[in-house]
Length: 347
Ligand SMILES: Cc1cc2nc3c(=O)[nH]c(=O)nc-3n(C[C@H](O)[C@H](O)[C@H](O)COP(=O)(O)OP(=O)(O)OC[C@H]3O[C@@H](n4cnc5c(N)ncnc54)[C@H](O)[C@@H]3O)c2cc1C
Image 1 (spheres, protein in one colour):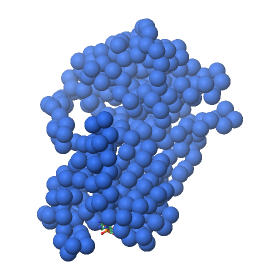
Image 2 (tube, protein in one colour; image 1 turned 180 degrees about the vertical axis):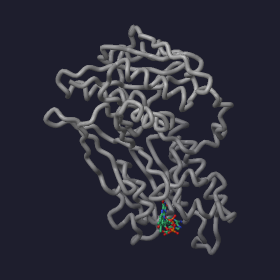
Image 3 (tube, rainbow, N blue to C red; image 1 turned 135 degrees about the horizontal axis):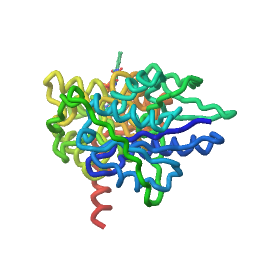
Image 4 (cartoon, helix red, strand yellow; image 1 turned 30 degrees about the vertical axis):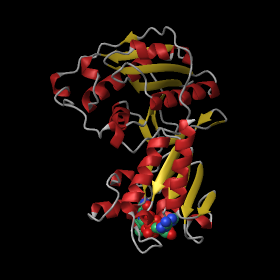
């Protein structure tokens, strides 16, 4: 009989972010699949009642929280104290949480304090014959493993973007608050602020429906014997503005930026997709002026529908890596696409 605990940190505005609600989907599915199991929700933050009320209908038997100014910010010492207190209070055997930077930093340590085990980067929790497994990927998403553990408590950190966020009606979910008083040594670290690019300079949008990936071809000499980098930048930014797509880049392109060449000014190493870059999750992806080489394409593992535009009919995409390949000049295609999008927006 497992006691399932969904552990979540509450956003500054008192809400539960999408990754937390995705983890709640996993927790409710697990409860439905494991006969006799119970579900608890544990919340950490400055205030937790409003967040609990938003998930009142999730089927949890108990709502437990640790609240107060000391628990508002992401800080290992206080987050670990709060999570440990909630786990002990609920006697949870399966502890599920979103794989946010805040929990990834804290919960493996909490598992150690509880004498438990922790697994990170979990992408699914299949149940067969009454036993829970987890799935996760290895070697930059090339191999998928299914793992079972009999050891409890088991802390499971679920990668954001793998599940649909829990949706349901709000209600009243009285939270039992645990009094946790952090000792002075636990509050030495203070978050002094956030540094983030201006909203219009932010090109990485994990929640976007579409990932647009630019390759080094945008900076290469074109049929007229010249490079057209400013035009490339304009086409890409116009497309991003009109579609709110997220922007990725190939390694070759982001490396060019680092080497001070004439390149796309908004492209950084954070945009890089692939074996040595990110593995984003979006329903659709469009690559333009990018060759589709294996170390790049491995980052497209979780893109559901992949399309590419390349002048080369023998590029990597054309050899089975994309669902649709447009053998065409990306400058011409994107100019037309932008014009169609503008036309659509104006009607
Ligand atoms: C260990 C290792 C790890 C790596 N990790 C990564 C990684 O994480 N991510 C990554 O991206 N790469 C990675 N690479 C590099 C990878 O192998 C490729 O070299 C790189 O992805 C190529 O980038 P690209 O396709 O943008 O550039 P190129 O190979 O230069 O291709 C440019 C493409 O643009 C096309 N093109 C040019 N003009 C146009 C036009 N007008 N219209 C349409 N198409 C046009 C050309 O036909 C060409 O196919 C790694 C390599 C190694 C060895």
